[in-house]
Image (cartoon, rainbow, N blue to C red; front, side, top):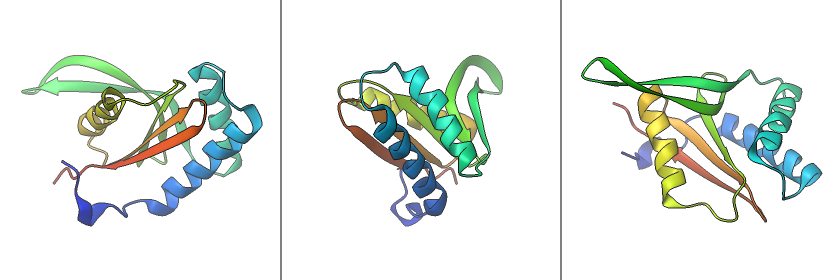
Length: 129
């Protein structure tokens, strides 16, 4: 569940990540596949002195039993999940995917970044308490 009182968690970090995403978009523009943007964003995150892990494995448990795996695009500073898309328009399903990653990892902050015709970014904060 989204917690409005917690909307400012990791704001400085997410602003840096968003700045890196704009650097990538300004350099590459629209039209590439997601993996190209992911690789370029990893370079920008490194240039910004941020620790990031690409293709981060996420395990999903139900009643303590492993029931599946996801792969999150990028985890930054072990605090923010970054899910990338390269589609004409984000959908509710893309947002739900990010929220599910947050639930599975117990992280509270995620960014959904779309490198479509225009860059678009959605920030999600999930209260896990």
